[in-house]
Length: 527
Ligand SMILES: [Zn+2]
Image (cartoon, protein in one colour):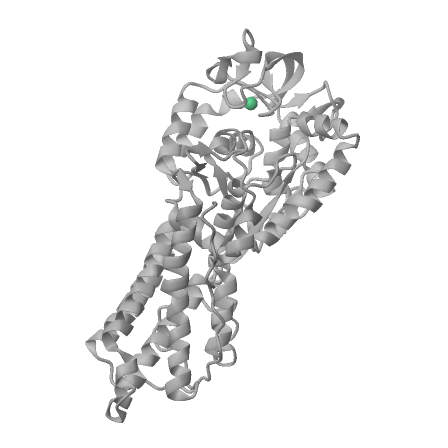
């Protein structure tokens, strides 16, 4: 069922040289939760992820490993990045590689247009370059080295010496766009979010922008500058364009028009590229800027940032091997205020798994189905007259769905799950008060028991629908056990925004057995 809306979301593309860690997986899951939510709402949804494969660092690593950069990238994509998506159950619609022909060709189309329109000129450049960042570093991010690098200038992020580069470069006239960018931030406060990120970007642009060096000639692993093949395109300029080359820019105008503009989820460390350079590039090309750039916070492990440079290194599979992909997804989306930094710890993960997923949701599902099986031979009873307690459950469900959807609109993923969790709590409280096991002892209470068990089962139906973007595996199992496939259709076809409309579960439906959705985990104290 189409809603008439369209939704296009991107993650940053992975730099192939990195090893996948939970920071990468965090962004992926957030984008996936949004994509699944919109897809299930009938919005024409497209989710994109991929890999960033050019640049000097890749070339150096490949050479050091005795291989070509293309072979090196192929290997990492095959062995690390595609498997990561499987590990955390990502439902992306496309995967772009910056070495794809559709990308390289249309980076050149884009660049040529900017050149023809006078936004690119050639000049001499001299600056301190960090190969780790693939960026000329502004003075504010250059610090004095210590230890083995004492006496040298080093990158504030990488703590490694910077290289003084002097070469002929092509420059993009980014300084022309300072005022237009400030107008954009002013007129469209949603463009950069959250608010803290927005303020930082505005501060940065207010200081005035320099033109951007967009080519390199000292190595050749990149997209060739179309009018001068002794230069390759600066890796960031190349990489940002993936968001449009993946949806038809330069070669399929109809698709491009239907998808673009989209929204970008990025870590706050690369916000500036997405909220300053990228919209300036698009403005120069006469293209619409993204709807929104959302910069989420960092994951802290033991107080330290998980990042591409200082690997505090937890691989996603270390978590999913024990807890499963659903728990990974639920934990990171619910435990961290999306947009702010958040701490990861094994203790917290383990505690929330047990309290919220196993005891809160999993147990609710299994005991409800067990009672329907025991008291009604597995056939969902028809409700009799609703009492105030039952009507309250219905109101909680309706409000939770509406609030969860509103939270998704503002990318408050944690808030969305908190809204949904009010239903888990309401249903568990309801069962405790209504005591269906006590009602079942006396035939005179049969009608009341019908209503109570129908109410809980229907609440579970709604929960399965609204939780499916976050915990797709567990909710699919629940959906099957609820036996609703025939009457209601596939779980992923359930329109999410009307999940709170009461009474969709058809009495007479036969439920089946449900294996433990979140089985008990034997943990060792060693962790
Ligand atoms: Zn650096």
